[in-house]
Structures are given as C-alpha cells and as structure tokens.
Image (cartoon, rainbow, N blue to C red):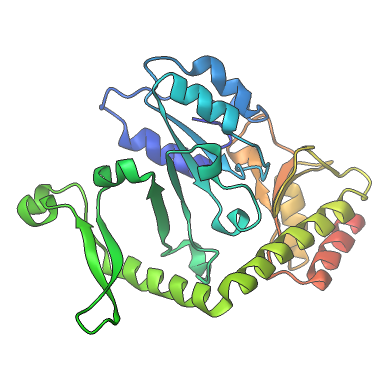
Length: 288
C-alpha cells in the first residue's frame, strides 16, 4: 500500500484487517516522498493486493502501468483509488491495467456538508464482478420496448443469511447516487470536461502565483491535477492560523499525518474557487 494513499483510507484498511492474518506493507509515513517504484521490491508471491491513489494524496500524477504489470507477474491484483473528475482528463486506470478502481464521487455535485454523507464508486474487471458485494443494476427494455432497469446481479446471501450477510444497501447512499446522476446528466460530457479543465487551469494558476512568494515553493515536480503541496517557510499550522485570522480556510497540514512534512501544506483548487479568491490567498501570504 502506497504511503501516498489517503491516510484515512489506510487507517480504515488497517482497522478492517486486524486479526485477519493480512499484513500491510509499504505505507510507512516516512516514505511520503517516494515514487510508485518504491513498492516494487515489496511485491512477491505472497502479495495479495497493491493499492495506489491516482492522483495520489499529494496531488501527483503517475503512470502505474509498470507497477501494475509487476504485480500481475506475481499473481497480485491492483486497486487504484481515483478522483473521478481527474479521470475526465487523464489516462484511465483501466488503460494502465488496474483490476479494481474505487473512489469518492463527492465532486460530482455533492456538497461538502462538514464531511458527509457522501457516496463512493466501486468498479472491477468483468471477470471479478461476481466477487463484488452488493447489487448491480443493469439497463434493458420492457415488453413495450421502453428503457427499464433491473437487478442484473444481486448476492443471494442478502436474502438468505440476513444478519450474517457481508453486504447491504443503504437508502441514504441511494439518494446521494441519485443526486450524483442528476449532476452528471445535467452537465453532460462537455460540461464535465469544462469542470475538469477549470479545476486544472485554476490550480496551476494558483500554484504558479504562490511559488513566486519569497519563502514559498512547490514541493514536487511531478504533474498534478487540482491539488499540490506547498512548501512553507513556517509550520503549516502557523500558516493556516494566519490565513484563518484573515477569513481564509487554508490547506491541509500534512505534518498531521507525515512527521517529516511539518512545513508542507496541501492546497486544493476546484472550479468553485474564483480568480479573485486565489489572488486574495496570494496577497495574504505575501503579507505574512
């Protein structure tokens, strides 16, 4: 598991695998700046699954084709946690050979809501579909030739095992999935492409302007989509406090999860941020 996978995801995985005899490796926080190639020596015949993020938690974009091929050679599967908005512009994990792709669909029209509720997406290659927990809804036509939706695949355990079943369906997730569908259908293909392009352009404008400030710089040279790490002249917590005093909610203090990154601020810019807001952020940091 890459150390550049969201720390919250990694905590959940470690919690779920306690007592299962599953060993996790590679995600030590001291490896924060490593590239995907750092995982290659850890993959052997005992490796069950390799997990990476795309773009990763620091916003960096890597092509995981080499890593995925290496995992497959050892008989392991590869799971990619992906940003759906970024996938509109980037090479897809499927084209890299990924077996499983999961992610957070909140960017598709779901408000932040102080952390939830959100909805996730879970996809696999067709050969693994019957291993998926939950239900798959498919499209067909009814006896009048009109579009209809049916449960194409549903795990019988949900009806037989009842309380011992390993999967369930939550109504609030269905509501969020519906809201997400409305958002995507309203914007359409072109609209979604415009959203992705706005995220990319605004983030790169912000990064270029912030990097011009004395004492601040971009920490990584890899390509990024709409998140990037800003190296600060002071601890990120102090920078965030200064911004908050000026009415600005700052970036994520990476020192909270990565001890070797105390002066690193994770900045995210989306289509919701205006140029004026970005310029205000730059001006306040110049004053600091």
